[in-house]
Image (cartoon, rainbow, N blue to C red; front, side, top):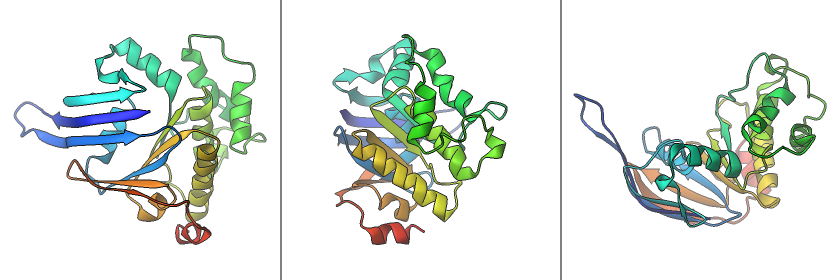
Length: 235
């Protein structure tokens, strides 16, 4: 599904020393994987996520998504790629405060080329267990519920790939486990999930863990499906 070939990213600002965030990262990610990208602050993990999500462009190297060179697309084509193939979940939720849960979830549908199927937002909220919160605003929801709305928004266009950047960073332990349960369920349903985290207990729920250190792949470990004990440890 995804092939990263010697990806490099260097940030430069006038008068400052260039910062090399990624230094030759090569990865192959198959369809249907549940992968965690782990690293400390400044390791390059979020930069890598941004490149996979076409939110940033590599300085060098190639990014292939189903054999299409994403870095070679123009701005409009990359926006279409993100809307059609990717769903994003972030630590800060990014919900519109005055909009209802359903209105927040329906927002990506405004940018689709084709007429969205009727009731897509309601079905997405039902999929994350919030069919009884359609008209609640973010301030009327718990942190875990707000993140579920954000996940429903990521699902509404039925993307093949879910990208989650520190999605449990603002959640309590119980909500963290509920959100990770949801990602596992989405993965079992056939979606590819890539999760960025600094938390080893969160990463333990993924089937594969890639560790980034100083902009390079330090390790790449496949793991068996998490046992119940791993869920308890994440609490």
